[in-house]
Amino acid sequence: MTILATSVRDFAALLKPDPDNAEGLDSWITVAREANLPHLHSFCTGLDQDRAAVNAGLTLPHHNGGTEGVNNKTKMIKRQMYGRAGFWLLRHRILLG
Image (cartoon, helix red, strand yellow):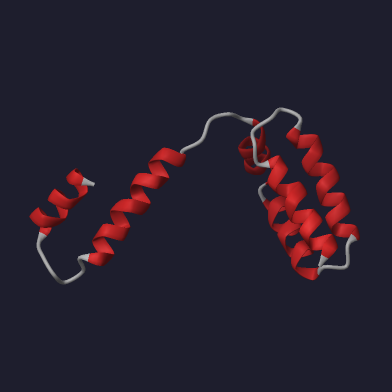
């Protein structure tokens, strides 16, 4: 559990965009693969499958977090109102929220 907690903490430190994170990710993956944790190995395999996107996400300051937040909020409102009202009330709640 200590190795897993340390690995998660080290990966979380990589989530703040920094140009040096690409090298940090390489070393993190090496350490994670040396650990005897199958789920961590699976996560590393997923990171390797689209390495260019992962490197861009960890190194570039650009992100679409604001857009994703609005989409998530809109879908939440839609689920809350499912079957209760029409489009106009949904539109009203989105504009007020």
